[in-house]
Amino acid sequence: MRYLAQRFSFANPRIAGVLTDIGTEELAHLEMIGAIVRQLTRGLSAKELEASGFAPYYIDHTAGVWPQAAGGVPFSATEFQSSGDAIADLVEDMAAEQKARKTYDNILRLAKDQEVADPIRFLREREIVHFQRFGEALRLLQEELDSKNYYAFNPNFDCMQNTTR
Image 1 (cartoon, rainbow, N blue to C red):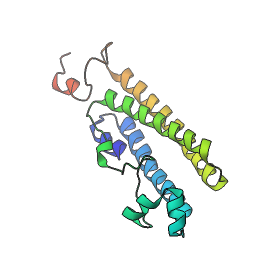
Image 2 (image 1 turned 45 degrees about the vertical axis):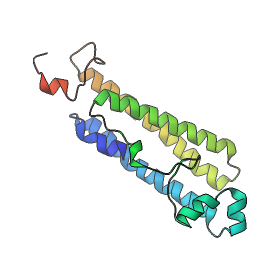
Image 3 (image 1 turned 180 degrees about the vertical axis):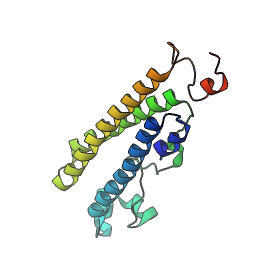
Image 4 (image 1 turned 30 degrees about the horizontal axis):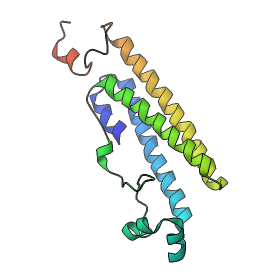
């Protein structure tokens, strides 16, 4: 969702396209994780729910799949950021992809079931590709700027407001 919101502030259609492509793919990742959670929790008894530590989640969501952090913090749109600053957004996007890769690394350290580990490995690989594509988009953006000090201003706003620079 973050990437799909950010794309509107990019003047370069290639960079906006990268954000659209990755944002769309991230929605598919959410679907894959939801399917894994559903497969792992389908048909659990009350005793199994309690023994697995899944009871608090079950109380709120029953058998529904709702994203939340491993620590139990539920999904919230407050996690999304669209600053309107192309450089800030792309750097933040790269950091988000690295954090996702790290999370998948940690899941793989704990996962014993190949039916869980295999799709997680795939998702991890995609996060690496996303990181690389955001890096390419950042490089493209920096090459377009006419300032040597491209970290000192917001290219999406300052260049439009003051074209005499």
